[in-house]
Length: 405
Image 1 (cartoon, rainbow, N blue to C red):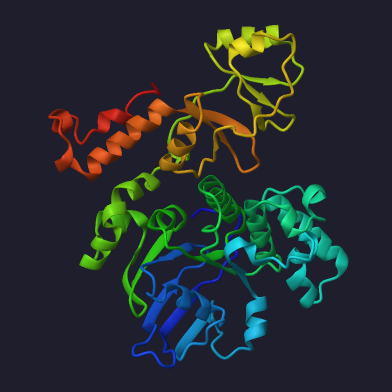
Image 2: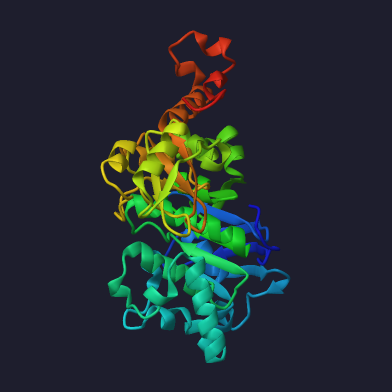
C-alpha cells in the first residue's frame, strides 16, 4: 500500500513459533514461519479455532509462545519484558476497549503518560490523532465513551493505539461489533490513515471480504496455525493454492472479486455545487448549464451537506442550510460493492465521493457501477453466463468501456 510518508512500520518475523495449551491434544499454532513486510497491512483469516488470534496475540506476547522466536525489525522480542513490549506496539480490539470513566483525551494519552511524556506533548499528540481519525478535538476531547457512537469509540481506539507512534499496529476483529454502514466507513478510514502513517498493520478478521479489502496481503490459516496460502487478494482469488483455500473462499469468491476494484479506479463525474444562502436563481442557472438534475450543497471546507434536486433549489429564494445525515457518501478506497450498497439505500442514483478530509471530489453513477460489476461477474463465472455475446466481447469487457451511462 502506498503511503504519503516514508514507511514508519517495522517488519515482523515469526520463526518456528509454536503454541501448545495445557490439556489440549494438538498445538493451537504449530511451527509457524511467517514474514510480514514493513508498512503493509496483512489480514489473518480462517475458520474458528485456526490459530489466527493466537498468532496475533503472540506478536505482543499477550499469549506467550511455547517455543520459537519473534522479531520486530531486527529486534528479537521473544524474551523482552512483556509490558515494555506492549507499550511499543499498538493494539485495537472490538469496541475500542476504552476505559469507560476516562475522557477521550485521557484514553488517548494513556501510553504516552506511562512513557513519561510531558503534558503539552501529550495534548498536542492527542489533538493531532483525533484529527487524523476524523474527530474534532474540541467536540470529542472531553467526552466519555458512553457519549459516543460505536464507530466513534472505535476511531478513538485507533487513535489511542497510535498515540506513542508505534511501528506495529495489531487489530483483533476491530470492526465486527458495529453496523455494516459504519463498518465500511471505518474500513475506509483505516486505509486513509495508513496512507499517512505507513505502519505495519496486522488485522484478524472472520470476514474474507474484509480481508481482501483491507489487506495488501492475506494469510489463510487452517487448524493448528497452518498457513494454507499467503499472498495478495488478487493472487489468492485467481489461484487458490489448496483445496482448503478453494473451499474456504468458495461461496464468497465472486463477491470478493468486487473488492479488487475501488472507487478510485473509476472515472468520477463532475458535481454542480452550491453554498448555504447562495441565491437559488444563480445555482439553478449553473446546474442547467451543466445539465445537472441535482445540486450538492457544501460547507466552507467543501464537505457535502445535502443533495437536493434542481426543482427543490428553485422552490426557495436562497439555498437552505438543511443537513442530510443520510447522504450516500463513499471514499476513493471504497470497493464497488461498498458503493453499490450505499447507492441502493439512496434515491439520487449514485453516491458522492469524498477524500480523507471529507471534501467532495465527484460523484459515481449507479449505472456505471452495475456495468463494471456485471463485467467482473462475467469474468469470474464465464461458464455460468447464459448469453452468447460473452465470447464476442472478450469476457464482457465492453461493459466497462466509454463514459458513465
